[in-house]
Amino acid sequence: MPSEKRNGPLVAVLLYDGLCTFEFGIVAEIFGLERLEFGADWYRFISCAIEPGPLRAHGGFSITPDHGPDGIEQADLVVIPGWKGADQPVPEDLCHRLRKAHETGARLASICSGAFVLAATGLLKGQKATTHWRYAEKLRQSYPEIEVDEASLYRQQGRIFTSAGSAAGLDLMLELVRQDYGNDKANSVARRLVLPAHRTGDQAQFLERPVPLRQGAEIAPVLERVQGSLADEWTIGRMADCSGMSARTFQRRFIEATGQPPGDWLTQVRIEATKKLLVEGTDDMETIAMLVGFGSAHALRHHFRKRLGIRPTDFRRQFGKKAA
Image 1 (cartoon, rainbow, N blue to C red):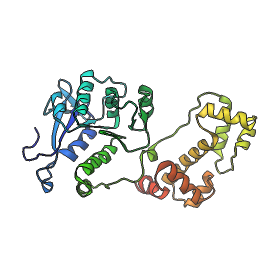
Image 2 (spheres, one colour):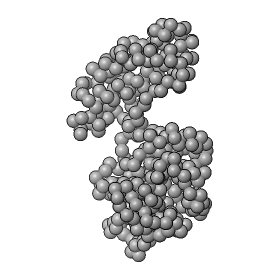
Image 3 (spheres, rainbow, N blue to C red):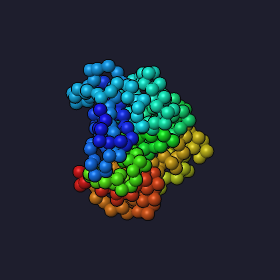
Image 4 (cartoon, one colour):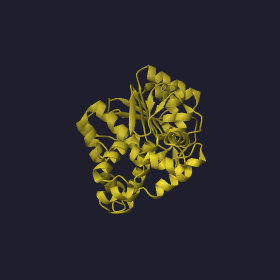
């Protein structure tokens, strides 16, 4: 039951069989702990089972909820901590309760695969939403009326919030605290969690970007040759010559095969090669820029930050083998 000592917004977190334990823990940590330094107007917190028990969480935990699904109707904020799977159906009763809660003024937030629950309600139709980058294409295919943003750590559309992979739930929950109580209290919660109040960059820095061929196998040898000699200067004309096509025909076939123009593809491949070198080695930026074909450290930094929202040095600091 919510604490009698508090009178702030009521946060309801959903429970289900197969609960994502870490995602639930994020919500409980942010909103469920007593924070006496903030006084009585801090959040109240309840857990709401959306189906009959017994309920189990990842890791072998059994769960005892505070409420059944009726608790959703009382909440000021409803948080969906992941979901059973991208292909798992969402009960219509749950969709109805979430729509009703939204209609009466509640905010709805999802962490990671919980975006599929919000998508099933129809409330994201015509809106932008994010989820873990591994689920982005599945969400896009299942709900083509949603504009899926696979790069952001979290998105807000009115009173609906979605976040990326599990840890991005922390970023979103801190943002909700920031909106409710201001920067000082949000920063205080972040310090207690030993987290930055704002993380550098976005989800794009974590993406693995394979480029599958859609069609046109005649393009494959060119892709392999370019990837094997990134340090060379690769113009559209040179790639077209290697394929035995005119430049115009080559560009058309290239887009058909990869879904993007040759220049965009080449930049992407060079960025991926840069990421690998930053993680595995200690070469300076000028050396890396020459190895991957950017030509200069300035050009490398420009493209890296434009694509990933983070500086190469920060990426190495976070993900390099020395950082581990």
